[in-house]
Each structure stands twice: as C-alpha cells, then as structure tokens.
Image 1: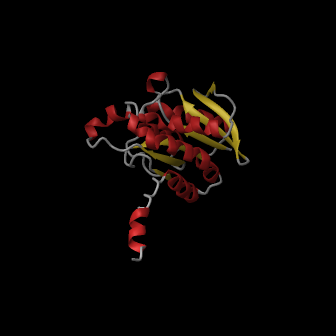
Image 2: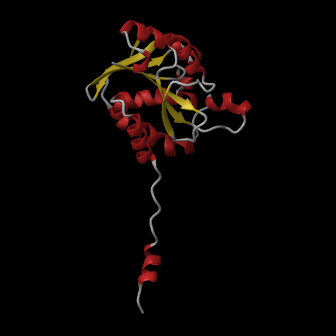
Image 3: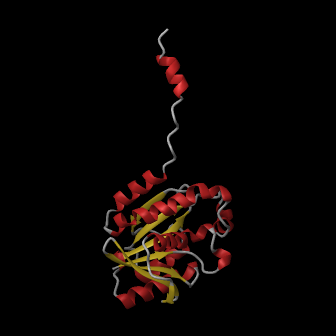
Length: 206
C-alpha cells in the first residue's frame, strides 16, 4: 500500500495558495482515478482507492504545514506503512514554475512540511517536487508562498496537475524516471510551427 501525502494548509483562505499545490495535486489524483470520497481521519482528509492495482491512501493533513508529520506518522503507524512506501507531493521554490522532479531522501530544503515529516518518519520517502518558482528575494518567500497563484499561472498549473494525475501509475509502479519523463513531455510547450510561406519561397523554382 502507498501512502500519498499532499502538503498544504487547510481552510478555504489557503486553497489557492502556492504553498497548497500539494493539496491540489492530491485532489487531481482523486478525480482522475475515481477514489472514494474525502473523509476525516488521522488529523487529515483521507481518500482511498487504487491506481493500476496498487492500493493507495491519499492524505491531506489538517495540522497546518509545520506539523504535517504528526498526521503522516499517525496514518503510517496505524496502517503499518513503511517510510519507503510514502510519497509526498509538495511545492518547491527552487524549481521553475511547472517543472517537476522526484527524489528519495535528502534534506528538506527549508520546507517546513518536509522538516516535520523528517522528524516523525525519517527521510527515506519519495518527494514529488512541484515547481512554483522563487520570488527572487528570501525575505519575500513567506508572502509569496502564502499568496494565491496569479492568473497567468493557470497556463502551466492546470496542465501540470493533469499530467501528474494521468502519469501517476508510473510512479506507483516505482518508475520515477519514466514518470518524470512523461510529465515533462505532457507539459512541454508546443513547438513553433514552421512558416509555410517561407518554405514555399525557398523551394519555389522560377
């Protein structure tokens, strides 16, 4: 069984914050793979379902970002889920908007939700890093992540969430590289069309 954790802050005032892209990704998985309804347990919203034969529990902690590990640990202990079978979906300032990386272990990179999970569960879990970009000044980070996505962000945000949901079976099967490659392909900007008139001019014979 996989425990898939979307990180964010509960409540409608935070719903569209950049910091809540993990919650948004979890919601996209529920929609795409027809999970059961969200319900409250383990200090979280949880939804159960399956992805290509793999049983999955999705979890969105109610504890606010800084205490996310409490909820994750409660679910993992009750369900006897080992740390390597936990996947965490979270925002990442160090990746450009719309980019995605998967890694196992390593530091929290200043992310308080990851720090809390590390404290309760150790570091040997997979992190799906969802790029939101950086405001350019570390003093602006708090305000940046706790503000809503800009309207212009919709151009990449929706396609990224859809690609994560559509391609998640690869990640569930342990193919992290294949997952990253497929998401990158699905979210790549369209290639510019060649100017057919220019081609005609070049190839025309007088």
